Figure 1 (spheres, helix red, strand yellow):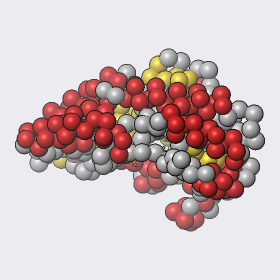
Figure 2 (cartoon, rainbow, N blue to C red):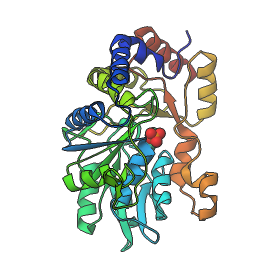
Figure 3 (cartoon, rainbow, N blue to C red):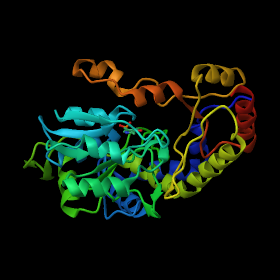
Length: 363
Ligand SMILES: *Cc1c(COP(=O)(O)O)cnc(C)c1O
């Protein structure tokens, strides 16, 4: 049996009548930028992640960049980011001309390590950007405690964590701002690009609404230099449909993860660790293997498609070759060992069985 890494089309097939209706309704409304679909999605998503405000934007990278810009960061400032993350986390900081200060992950959780974070803080640190990587919440309470002591704002990159909880509280309003991506492959994905920022700070939400729309609150009045980064109403209308299924989809992911955790134990691979304080949403199910490439090839031969998140750490990318960054050994080691197994809300039981059987043979 062939198991694809992720079947995005299945999400459309399941909800085709509602999604087609939402798109038709939006086209009929005559509103193609802003308007009630966007506003309703913002209200519904804010409620889902237990935040007071949601500001929808064009994509997850813009969400990060705008949230960081609102903290006043600029050249000469330092921003702490994980050494092990998707490059968007880094690019948002670089776009503002600030200096990247990477911290190595906790080797078990692969998320930000609060102890390493604290040693990286200097008197030029202007923001901390933890990432809730793979759908596993970073230790946000410990990170916030350190940030509070040093009086540094926290902007959370939650692009992989829609619906995750830490100490029974949803990720969505712990830090000053929390940024989201609705890239199609995320747990909540649009049929194109999309993103958002959630926050409990009403003044910040107001500023972000202005920033995403040419720095304008009133048409043709521009008090600040903003950008054009808006979630379009067609995407908002489809996200509203999908949001009503997100809990169910996250539960399905959790069931698959539970199955993998029980049936793949005792093999020569390292399974993901789950902190007892958290409920992850299993955006990815990432195992580690000493011979990762061989393992992936053996799985491929058995029909199981896997991906690597991520094969090259940010500091070794061409984009950062001029930055003269030191080695980050843990990020490099993870990039050699990690492998993402198929997981998604529309995987069938036979597909899950096939992954389990194949991993048991190939590990
Ligand atoms: C997907 C992702 C982003 C960026 O989102 P886009 O919508 O693709 O711009 C940022 N950070 C992380 C961790 C991501 O996984």
